[in-house]
Length: 450
Image (cartoon, rainbow, N blue to C red):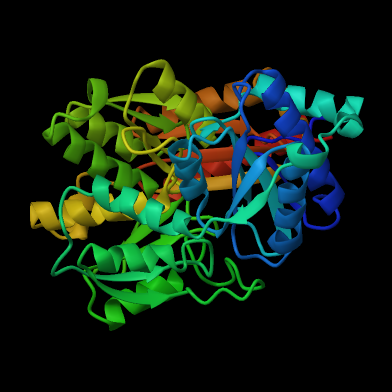
C-alpha cells in the first residue's frame, strides 16, 4: 500500500479519500500494531477518541471507535474536543492510544485521522509504516470474541479534565482583561471561551456556533478580518483566533493589528527567559519564521534553532535537545512543559497572562520584533527536485543574497505534495521583497519548467 501518512496523519476529502472503511481498517491496524509492540502491557487496553465538529467526523469517528473496539480496545469517546485535549487525555488516562478526527484548518469537506501513542505523543515514521504494513497484510484476520471485545463509552469528563489542566498551567488569573475569542466554529467552540471565563477574563465570543458545515468558514486563524473588526468595535484589550482543531493560535491587538505566530513566540520566549524557564535560552522555529524574529532573539540573548517546515520537525528538535518552546509562524506553538503538541487555547492563555503580568499592551509586547516585509510566490508546474542543483537557479539566489547585503533573506523550498517551488524573500521594503521574489520566480519558471 502507498504511504498514506503525511506530516500530520492521514488527510483528504471525506468519504472519497477518507472513508469509513479506511478509518476502520486503520484503527484495527493501529491497535494491533501498538499491541504487538508491547504498548498495551498485556492488560486490557484503552483508547481516547475525539474529533472536531465537521459533519463527516460523525461517521468517521464511529468507524474509528468500531475498529478499535473490534481489536479488543476499550474506547473512551470524548466527542468534540481540540486535538491537544485528546493528546493530554491520552496521557492522563494512561491510554494506550489516542485518535483524532480532524482536518485542522482545512475546509469542511476534508477530514483526517491522526493517532497518538501512549503518553499522547505523535507516532514515529516507523510506527506509521508498521500500521500500513499491517493493513496490507490484513490486520482484521484475527479479532477477539466474546468478553474480549472492546467496549465504547462516552467520556464527557474529558472536557473538564482538559480545562483543569489548562487552568493549572496559567501563572495568573486574567481578571480585568477584555478579550474577543474566535473559535473558527471548531473544536474549541465550547471549552475555549469557557476556560477564559473560568480564568477571570471578560469574554466576547465569535465563530463559536458549529453546525457541522461551517468549520473554518470565514472565521478562525485563517480568516482574521472579523476578529480584527470585533476587537476594535468592542474596545477589547486583544483577540485570539484558533483553527478548526485548536492546535494553532493567532492574535489581534487592541488596534486591530494581527500578531502572528512569530511575534507570539517572541513574547513567550522572553517571558519564559525572564522567569528562568526557557530551557537553554533557546527557541525552536522553522525556516519560514521571519528574519525579524531571529534578529530580535539574538538581540535579547535567545538562541534559535531552525528546522524544516512542519510542527513534527520542531517537536523532534525540541525533544532531541530537551528544549521547552518552539513553533511556527502559523501560530502552532509547542510548550513541552505543559503538553506534547501545539495547543492554541494554552497559547492564548499564556499570551493573555503575559499581558496581565507585564501591565503592557499586546502591541507593546509584540514590538520586541519588527517583521520584515515578506513575499511568497508559489511557482507551479516545475521540477521541484532540481531546485537545489540547477546552476541558473543557484546563481540567481546568490545574486539576490548579494543584493540584500544581509538585510534580508531568500528561501527556495520545494513542496512536499505538489510539483511546485515556494519562493520566499524578506527585505527592508515591500517593493524590494516583491521585486526580488518575482525575479527569482521567473528564473525558477524558465529553468525548471516541466
